[in-house]
Length: 157
Image (cartoon, rainbow, N blue to C red; front, side):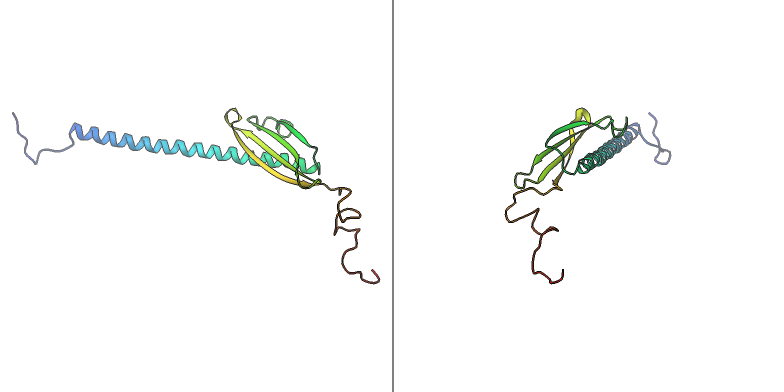
């Protein structure tokens, strides 16, 4: 049996090297997991941003109609953006507000993600540009709008 003196012993034992490799592997696995989570969060953020922009585009079309018809419509974005957003679908639902006859609740929902399981919703209340007839206290149109005399009258005007 040979004995080594303390001065000649240099280097690491096999067990020390294996423990160091295991610690390094666990650290690298944790970093890889963090990187994967970061990429997933970035992709989800991009999809949510696209859904918000697309919902605003559909809502802008509803605003161009001024006072959209009641009901539900749906579709994809092929007509607006050809082949740019194949994983996005939209639905627009227009309802009476319930309180005011000349106000409609317009809700746009954009579906996206795997099997369209995620959604982004945008709601807006739209007022009719044509005043309804028969409002209490209004002889023509709405109180306070041009064409109606309110407050003290100024002579000569």
